[in-house]
Amino acid sequence: MIILNPAGFDRQARWHSFSPTLSKREFLGGPFSNVDLRFYKIITTSLNEFIAFELSLVREVEYVYTAYRNAVFYVWIVVDQFEPEVRKRIYDREKAIIDEFSDFEFDFYIVARTGRDVKELISESVTLAYGRSRL
Image (cartoon, rainbow, N blue to C red; front, top):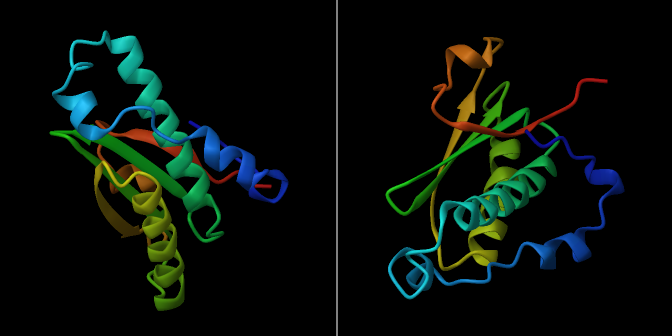
């Protein structure tokens, strides 16, 4: 789990550190397809951190969960309530993620908690990438 403080984060420097080094074709079926799983973990962890940072910029986002399956990055974004303005800001962050990692496919879901425990809504088979700290 990554807990970030967006206010103290150097966005420009961090943005460039997450640029992928391999295209989707190279990674999934090309010359690097036989790379050991340690390399795979490094790539997905970096992408998870980038996704966590981008979505943490929307203060209503409470949790972000991710999974990589069948060549698609799935992202579940948990907020407490569905609000049109918040959804628009989330969509803007999703677009930034897609633009930065255009070689990858994403499938985003916004989940409204509506006061319920997040464990009731999200499968245990996904990875917690971000949880907003409660001060």
